[in-house]
Image 1 (cartoon, rainbow, N blue to C red):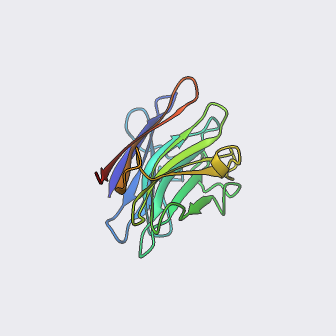
Image 2: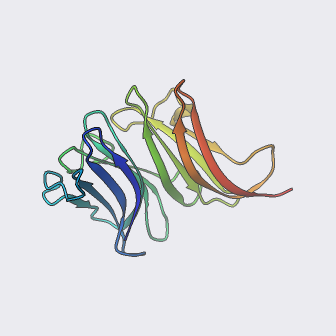
Length: 193
């Protein structure tokens, strides 16, 4: 397995998000550590939460109430973007999406979730790469409960490259929110001339 993201909480504890085991038998894994690096046993009973289905975890963010958001994708013949919310105690939050998980295939025949962040007003932004013939870079904004934010491009914005050139593949490499509220996405891609 591997940790793909870390978030340091205001009290010094650390949230790690990533994948356990190895493809194709991997699961999303989330650990919460104390400031000294030991497992926080108040989180999921032993400091570690592991998803029950085969999937990968990539990005993490923590909401103001301590809930943890993890973005990733299911694995198998069709990968779907998956956003999971865990309570501060380390249990799936059933008020979010379907049984604590929001899932979509928007943006292509495959969807690979990579980054998630929380706006100051609590709304959630996540970014993923799609696997379509010309590639897709996707952004979505959700309300605090995980439902799509209709004020944001019908909840999902999909890009197909820059300056009209065809994109072969785009991979999201970072997601930031400026102090004035604009969303910045960094990505790589192969462009035809």
